[in-house]
Amino acid sequence: MDLIEDLIAAYRILAAHDVIDAYGHVSVRSEINPNRYYLAGHIAPELVEEKHIIEYDLDSNALDAKGRESVRERFIHGEIYKTRPEVNAVVHNHSPAVVPFSITKVPLRAIYHMAAFVGEGLPNFEIRDAQKGTDLLVKTPYLGAALAKTLGVKPAALMRGHGAVVVGETLARAVGRSIYLEQSARMQFQAQLIAGPGVELACFDDSEVQASVPAQNYNRAWPMWRAQALAKLRGKPMTDFLPEWPVK
Image (tube, rainbow, N blue to C red; front, side, top):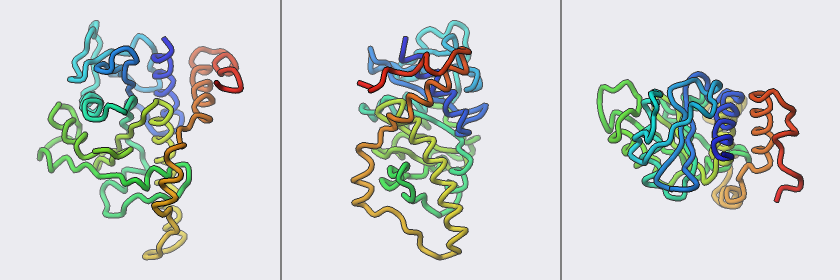
């Protein structure tokens, strides 16, 4: 099933780009039933194979777990799919360059054309506003719904002291946004160090964001990333996993 292979590749792509490590997860909505989604069970992303993929309903109940343990934060995915019918892929990561922005009052800005979507605004989910005294994990439907509400219609949201959630209409877009969000956060930190405290950065204006985001689907990068991940997994040449060119 190509969708499952794409999902396996997505896990490994994000791990290769240091967006996720032993933790973090990515899901994809079913192409057959929009009220279902696929997510790997409780296993490190770089180890994910087809046998680890579990199908869930939008309440995040496993349809056939077969004894496999689910990730506790699966409610992030189900609750976002409920509120965002156009979203077909969700990434939750602990992106290291992003986390510092989640605990400061410094907003992430659109400074980099590959991450222009940042200019649409990235809200910060403060879990204490929903429930005090948690371990910061979104492991109940209530907390998943609270996160989905904070995300709203945005392409991503930070999670205070935890990481981020990133969404897309396709796996390619959700994965690409996750990779370039990490890069953009690191570049913004570097640029502010160069500029010095209090110096305004030359960020995108609203018209540049609006001109950039619609076509930013990462469809040039996705076949390369996918082929690299699957070639490493299957022990075959990258060319075995590349689409015919030109891509139709």
